[in-house]
Image 1 (tube, rainbow, N blue to C red):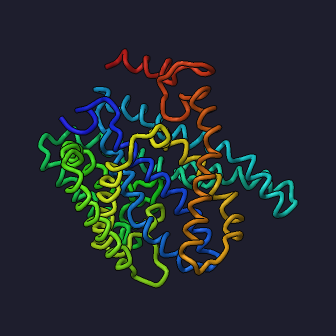
Image 2: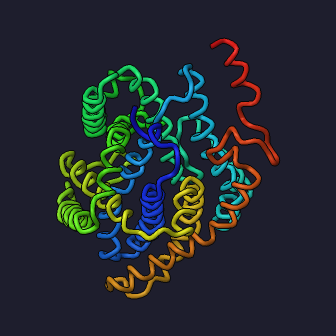
Length: 381
């Protein structure tokens, strides 16, 4: 038995690693906006963070893989509820903001209404134009569907490891040569992020397979962990900038921009283990625990920052050529953005938990999402 199935209770360092990861999402997105103001320092920070932070989330997600139902169809429906419903929610929540934004830009009432509708139609293809950060949940859904279909067919861990390597390799080959393959596949690139899901499935499976070993790693003495953390951090710093096929390149999984396959994989692995080892030194804190438990909602609220706040706030960043000023400013903006998300987290968790990753919870305003259809399917199992 593997993954989170072996241990049902929450593990603090996992939540701490998720908290670090979501903070890097907030930081990376404000840094990307500051980069647009001409800051080379912000560019380097974005390049560093983006080299591993999304592979980290897919790796961590693999910890929690397990089949909950015998029926594959029922399993996929459950994944749809947990991953895609939140995407639709955060997209719908963004529509009024987009209407205000478009009207402020053009004073055209028709465009104000039509543009969000057109953007909403892209969700049919899995394109999350209304809230770009939620692309991750679409890709995670496709990744987990592949895992549900493929992993139960393999009994040995070495077979699953080979699947991870094959999936990662195939995904990178497709991404780098898609124009050559598309006429034969007949599928436009990254509809429902299915092609990028091949890449992320590799990290997902390795996370699934690594959990038992990571439990042991996180329990070794502090000096050994500190030395390992220093090693992996150094390797991440030394390799992230080597992945530069052209000037200004940044790894962006959303767009299947991986650069050099070797450097991409190396830096992603180094960054993942750096984060996990750092997380073992974070003192137990209700704040860290809270952030780690609510990364899904924070991912959605970060989309509002990405679209509506960061472009303006980036123009206020002083001393674009100063590492301390840029780092301090991005850190403060990230912390404030997370704090502004707290009321949203509270309201969604309290009144609409079914729409933010807990579809089987009852009330207070909505019933369990599987209360009708899932039970009907169970009669045929």
